Amino acid sequence: MNRPLPEPAAFGFAAVVSDVVIFCGGITSAGGQATNECRLLLQDRGHWKAGPAMADARANAAHYSDGTMVIVAGGVDGSGGARLNTAEKLVDGKWKPLSNIPTPTEGYLQFIFNL
Image (cartoon, rainbow, N blue to C red; front, top):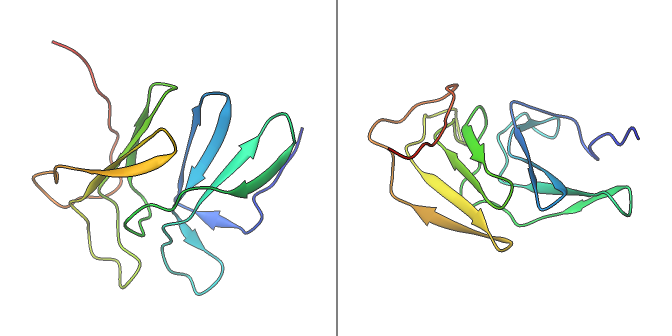
């Protein structure tokens, strides 16, 4: 099944949460600015719909998902490309703020492990 995003976007992130594909952030073709929008691809319906918006517009951010939630951190903002130090967690359909990361950054890989 080929289902392109409703609007082209670059440098966003994608994850699968509870069998729903989620695509958030990135730089959209409308104005070339980072966005806070998220889109959900519903497998049973085969189309994209608007999802919960992140608190911060961001592109080129790190993300992690375990299939039940998504964490996103850093990236660049939508107002001029400043690096972000904010982090958010999508759980139960809502974005919740997390503690800021120590250094504003973009374009890195994020993973979580238990020691």
